[in-house]
Length: 596
Image (cartoon, rainbow, N blue to C red; front, side, top):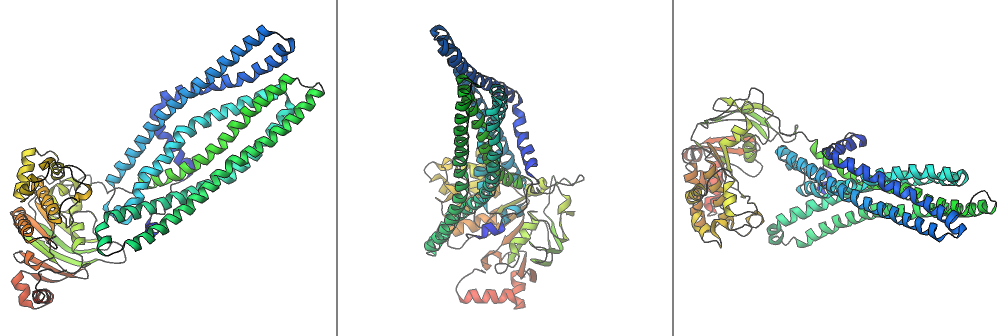
């Protein structure tokens, strides 16, 4: 737990920042008409803002100098109208941009989630779930902030800078040169702090993913934490990850907070210089008081968007760091597509053959070595061996969660890689050792076995799985909502619901990872009876944790260190007096029936 998330997180980078921007623009393209309206409103808003200093100049140089109250009133009304137009259009394009951004981010989040559904199981085995959650939520929200505020502010700021620059040169080129001299200073600050902001934001988002991963793992494993009194250790790991995130957030916050004061200091120095120079020019008769008043207003219009551009740059850097992580996930290779000539399997029989299968999760570290066996249609195959022997890996290959590296696996005479993946998965059903239940009703959890199943079929599947009796005793029966992972149910009840799912799926091949430890005797009998019933007439692979479970299997495979060291029926294996016999004798003497 803890810091290993950082070590296993993918380090591959998205191509380049311009590529990330192009991909983000693709999500805005669907709102082209709304973006045109945004552009129109931004232009109108900027024109209204640019016109107001001219009215102020006329008030000072004409109305006040002449003492003309009527002219002053007219100019004041004009100024009020300009301010109203500016603020109304500002509100209008801000609302529009929020809607555009919400749509773009919705599509981005949907695409990311859809991509996660298409990724290989290997990806989820290698990446902490908390970090993936962080990408789907926090990183996408960073993008949302940049799109909803940054894009429109950037466009408006560029127009504002360009318009006010023309205006100040028209008013007084000497004062304008002072203003222009501030530009490289602002962008030097923005460049240095912006790059630092991007780097620190990337680190902050990564550390947030680490913390989320730790929290997700800890909450899922609370029973283990409490059973082994590991609260202090978990708290220590959390404190370490939390402190690392605090330091990363502090660095990012320090950089971000330095921008405002740096820009304000630059602006204030420039303002003081322009006031002094403007007063000097008025005293020399080179400029009017109205010119200086208008110029100071324009200088504010010039500096504000100039600094906004720099601040938006920092915001965009944070968003790009988030978008990089999002697109990094979206660029992961999906499950390989079916071959163009993939074989349909409309009516599978369940005849399975493994021939000289070799596999390793890491290429140079084999987990399975030369695995060969034949499971005739309708046979029950028991897989026995210590933890790490390769039992689950055999199942991972049979389900094509992973593809083998050499050898072949055939179903009804067809290589698994030549069968349409959809048909293969439809032919299989898995009853895992730890049945995963969703935060939905009991009925909907069983329905995962076959989504189009009727309510009557769901009830019948539960009855066959010996689950109907306890379901009807729940507060709302089949409509009882389950908490996350079915925490309100016992392990045995969760296992019975998983068996009900398998009944509903009506598979040709059934995979059962037995979970009968720590279950009361009555529930164990229910499970054993349901397992025998669901295996009837199907090819079944049984990962056994009790020798009593595989006693009646047609073929028992005994695995050690990725190899089949013994095979045969229960009686044949006992007669060999080998590994299986020793396991049997050890646990008989201990008064237990479990292998591991």
